Amino acid sequence: MIDLADATGGQNRAATSQRRSDFIQSLRELPGCVVSERSYTRGDHVQGTVINGSVHVQIVRSGMLSASATMQDGRRQIMCFLLPGDVVCPFELAETECRAEALTNSETFDVTLPLNGPERPAVMSLLFELSHKQLEKTLGHVVRLGRFNGAERICAFLLDLAHRSGQSDHETARLTLPMSREDIADHLGLNAETVSRIISRIKRDGLVTFHSPTDVEIPSLRDLAEQVPMRGLQVQ
Image (cartoon, rainbow, N blue to C red):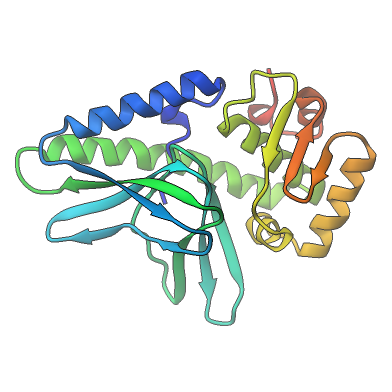
């Protein structure tokens, strides 16, 4: 999985949308690159592939996807939640079932990038840039899983969603959480009961307001950021 959030903005919704449009247009202009569109319903599987010397990736246009790895004994790790602008690429892990799944009705741009011919240097440069950005985000997630307590992980998770949805320059944020408590737990290395208990606690503390199980409001991003020890996740 490759994440494109940093390459496509993050602080302002309008600027983020424009950067995504510019990025798609730059792909359309790349010789040998083919861009089409595809729709998915909730529960559909989405996967990039490598076919006949080309790499096939999908860029989320709307909706939300999850990328997960499930071990043979049934234990699952959700590696990331994919929002508009994020990229689904081929990935494999030994002795696991790896897949991306639509959590809502979603749309993607299907992008076929040539790995051979004169376009190869430009394509490899693009894939390297995207891989480097994902590596940075993955290392940050490893630190959070290894050193944050449960409440800090959930607060950081909500802040990250606010940032990636283009709301981190606001005082407040409104998020849609189509994933289940089990999904959040499998992403943050917790269990569903712990996630529910922590969410109830931060609701009592006034850090979040749930208007429905999937509709959450953050009254103060700054107050929520104060619960997170890593400065890189705090609202400036």
